[in-house]
Structures are given as C-alpha cells and as structure tokens.
Image (cartoon, rainbow, N blue to C red; front, side, top):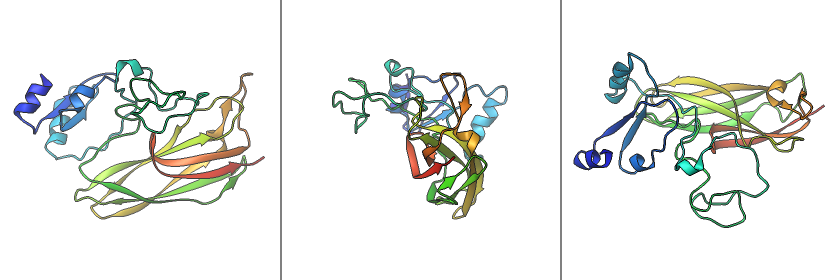
Length: 235
C-alpha cells in the first residue's frame, strides 16, 4: 500500500505511530520522508500537522536503533566488543568477522539520529585537558553552526569509550547532551563536562569502580561521530 501511494504521489510523508522499533526497510526505499511520532497522545494530530507544514522545525533524536531486518534483532548502539574484528563495509561480507553473512551489522536508523529542516555543521571539538584525576572535571567544547536557511534546535551528544578495561565495555556509551537553538548562520560553542563517575564500571565482584587508562570522547550520534579525541584517567 505504501509503495502504491508513493508511486501515485511522490510528495508523500509517512507518519509512524508505534511503541518500539520496527523494520522500515521497504518503506524507506520508496518514501521520501518519514516522521516518527511514537505514542504522542491526544495532541498528536496537532503536533504532526505543525511539523509536516513547517510551523515547527523537528529536533527529536531516536532513543533506540531501528533494524534493517528482523534477523538483526537484538540491535543496539551500546553493544560490547566481540572476539572478531568488525568488517570494513556494512554491506560486504568478508568472512571471519563479527558480521552477519546476509545483512550488515549496523541498523537502518541509528540511536541519536534525527533530521531537521535545516543543516547543522560541527566545526570543532576541543578538550581543556588530556589527563584527569578522580576529583577532576574535563570540559569538552563543541562548536556548531546552522548552515541552513531555517532556525532550529540541535541536540549535541557526547559519547565515551573505555579503550582497555578489566570487563567487557560497550563500543560507545551515551553520557551527556545539550539542546541548543540556532538562527540561520549562527554559531555556538557548547560545553559538556566529563567527571570520574561517568567512567566507572561494574566488576564481576559487584564493585562500581573506575580504572586508570585511556578513553575516547566523541560527538555526533551512534556510529557517526564528527570528532573523536583521547584523554587519560590517572590515579
């Protein structure tokens, strides 16, 4: 039905009302636009109309990953490392990697992903220090520019990864964010803070501790980082 409708009218936007991730591969192939509403409640119709007709610029980001195929499930952004390397391309099987044989390992839509009627450009990321102790705070500065012709809001997201740990850690962990408003052509610098509790892990003995070593900090959204830098937690 969706295919027939889009063939009859290419200017079709698909509204999604759902409570969990669904496979949208067939719809994404034909629909020029999709608006994820989840369960918006009694005012959902008014909200959808305001978004579709441009009265409001969408700024939401996905809080979960959407799979390409049912066989990918479970698929989630904060997956742990495997014993095999990740293949170079998401659509080419190379053998002896941590990938499916008949589909990619990455989702169709990613955790933290979301479009806008304008375009935001991440121009720079800087750290105020490269080493931090248990009582220190590291400040990450991110410069974002609205390169489009519409005012809008952007969610600046920060992710961490522990390079070497005593237990298996996720390849990426969403740790902080700030939502900013930018006029067309406006540039803002956002500051996000990292402290020692954000670097802690649970040990097999049930201890919640931090371990000295190297970490990476990234901005963007899951598996699509604009900038990545290293820093070290010391004793």
